[in-house]
Length: 359
Image 1 (cartoon, rainbow, N blue to C red):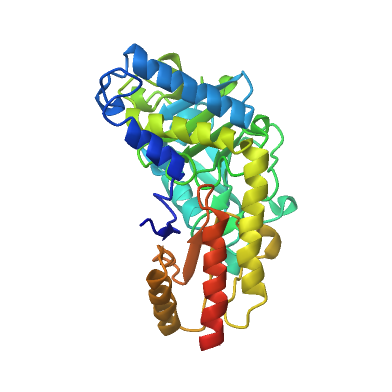
Image 2 (cartoon, rainbow, N blue to C red):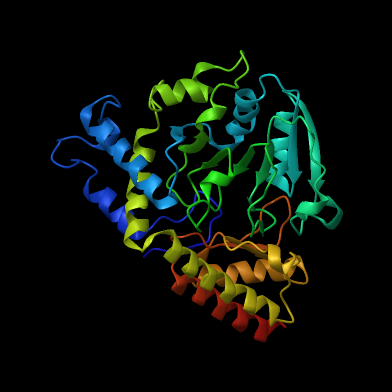
């Protein structure tokens, strides 16, 4: 029996994807091979990668002047790879600080350039997104970096950032493919796959063509977006099986009606939990309402002893991975695309039951 998995990542995958992957494990489409055994330069895997890219381009309506790269290293590695690829001729980069993942990005970029923190939500414990009019941008910044969904604090941009002529780089690891976005508003979009796209090991980078010639001379070839783009993401061996699973997820998303349909489902799932919290006298969410994450719903109980009792009761009912991140504690329900609304309803019902006993 499968559990109701609220893990923040690696996270739940659509069951039809897992079943199809299982059926194709030993023999992909009559090839006599598992995808894990294929040469990345063989016709079979090249077809898999090409279809995955085409389906992703269709889902996100990616313009033709953007390259799609399937890489490795996760968003943490991209924190260093981003400045290496964009800093030539510039000595400063702007960052918006909205939480733990922004903090890691800022620290890593500081090894390569001067970082201007153009706005920060630290004054209110990272419970909001700083308003655009408060941003103090540099005139000569190489780029502006934002993390558009902070999984730990449960804070999400519900609007598209704008920095004029400065290219915007967005870490969208935890909410890409959960909503409709305008890719053309960004210079670079990147993210680890293990939230909404597939298993850990695959990193997606979407980069505008005119930004491919800005890399520092020290940039290693495997991390050089222009070189990887020229090699169709195969300068080194890509994470082949993770690309295959991501391709199955893209097919599943298309079958759900695309991103417009999945966004409406995600809005409904998030509303179920936030309504439960807001109508409660036991639970609290400190994030400003207009900045609440649809993907990562965080909340607190009055004391840690209740946290333990809450988590124990949830696990007894088949709900797992609800413990908040070790950096902040509390409770966190990650409700990515593959989490069915029935799972969220089960959690909301349990929350009301728990409050009746402990409120």
